[in-house]
Length: 407
Ligand code: PLP
Image (cartoon, rainbow, N blue to C red; front, side):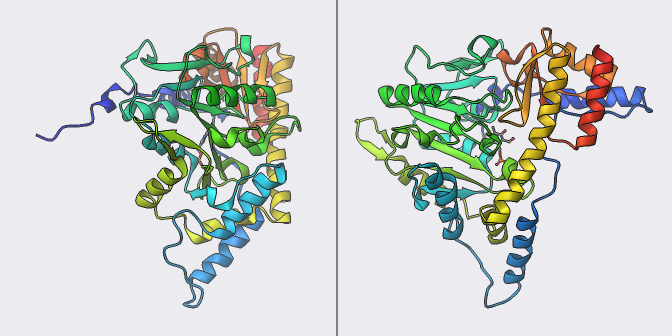
């Protein structure tokens, strides 16, 4: 009798987006003349930058000619893209990351989810709350947690992000081994200062732990004092893996391209205490289970680093950040405290009441959809996430409606 991986039965079903969809369709069915605006989405709305589209077309033409056709590429990515990443995302910010420490992939979701495979079954996990759900769920699937009791998996150290700590968790009092951090954060939009990240790197060094640093929203950082990479922190090459994605930087959510940095100086240990380079383990995993990102997509990603590409992606992000500013100002005028939106595409609104109650209020009175914070973790209760990924017209209309409804 074939048996299932019973760890999957421990997964708490996420009803967040299906619950939202149900409430929205019930509302629109009952109110057909009242169009709803979705400010809850985590997907980009604007098209690919022109340079990326041109690079895609040119690379597709190469695939059409025998002389330039490409079959399987290197699993880790083409050198032209790895070198562009090393130069523009790292060397330019004073970080020493070599091109062969960069693994190109088809998304940070997969990388954040798969990375846990190279660690022992009994590593002690530290995971933020609220958070992008992939970190915890992939560890549940792998059997690294106990059951879910009252919304939390047993055996996980939750790093609480609350108004009291400015939504940036401090290092825990207990020792942990595998620490997930995400800055700029989804869902809160919070960013970590150099001092806060330094404390994490020091904690990891003390505990011989590893930090998994998800900086999918790095390109939204506008405050020059905020680090873009964990490798801007001294000693991070010995304790951190970093995940980056072209999804929110250049509108690649449907195009799919990302990368993971595993420094060659990053070690973890076997049961006998011998050190092993995680780079070699991840390389083995990547080359065994992944066959590379399509050549035209990697060409489109490399175009992001050209002069025109940097200008076009920066303009794209400025557009979303201007949406975010409008949202923040409008919510502040209504008396709500919120963070995010200045160095991130998300705003985290402290609603002062139950997050689903606030969701219903916005839907029923303003026909605006937000994302209830409770769906991202216990500490998300009392908050909602509003996303800047939308057209200017939708944002302005939504804000006018919210102001009229809540005034
Ligand atoms: N990490 C965070 C924090 C995200 O919010 C997302 C997407 O929403 C991802 C990773 C996934 O990015 P990708 O599109 O590269 O899979």
